[in-house]
Image (cartoon, rainbow, N blue to C red; front, side, top):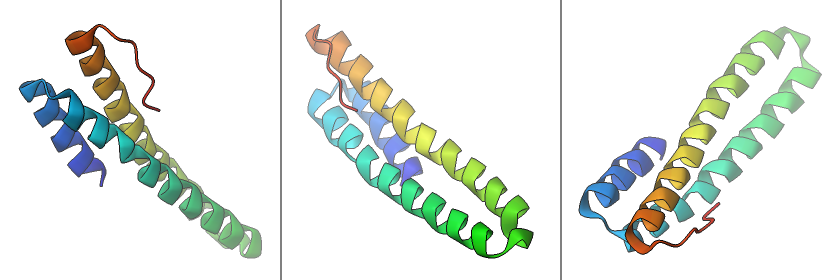
Length: 92
C-alpha cells in the first residue's frame, strides 16, 4: 500500500493533478488503521509471551516507518495543492 501511495503521489506531482493527490492522501487512513491494529495485536502477544518482546518491538518500529510514509505522502499532496491552488489544506 505504501509503495502504491508513493508511486501515485509522485505521478500526481508530475501531472500537477490535485484531484489525484487528494485521492492518494485519503488512502492514508487505511494505512493508519492497519498500523494501529498490528500494534495492538503485537502488544497483546508480547504481554502473553515475554520472549516475543524484542521481535515485537522491532516489528512495531518497522510498521511505524511504513505509517510515516503514508504521512509523508499526505504532506506531498498538501504541498501540491498549495502550489497549484494557493490554498493551505489539511488532508490528514
